[in-house]
Image (tube, rainbow over all chains, first blue to last red):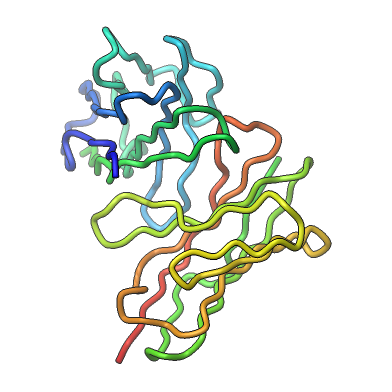
Length: 115
Length: 112
């Protein structure tokens, strides 16, 4: 079936530097999401994005985080500056519509290590 | 706020035995419940979903019944296969239909 691609699969970055996580969603999907999973913990909602705007964000979505989808291409999560506690797996997902009318398609995740 | 609880972190089963993975939830509103499965180094994939009390959706031999009276959505399969070894996440959506709330996940290991 259609897939969500996440690039890169792994990233190591020095604390304080900027990182951009890229997500190539399913081509006709309209809703985009980022989830964060710290090792050993559950996946937690960060943000969702529709029609060029953030619809909802959680308290985990710090001021250092931003999302965009320029020119309908990659859906990106930027962290600037990074902190040690940002080390986690970040999952991107997309859907055609809202729950329960549509199902999410998840990517395989980007494993981010901040050192 | 909404929450989902999966009490077992790791379940190890012999092939052929029945599977039951627990999931309970707390929700302000009438929720939608989901089970996702994630094999090693792959993306989480939707396994089952339910919006209706006491209905039992099935997929790939797995089934789960949403019981609103007990706030549960346990995942079951009559006979485990080696290929069922994976991470299983229970999730809910209720107060906001634009996000999922996940449980901690249960790692299922099926051995010969």
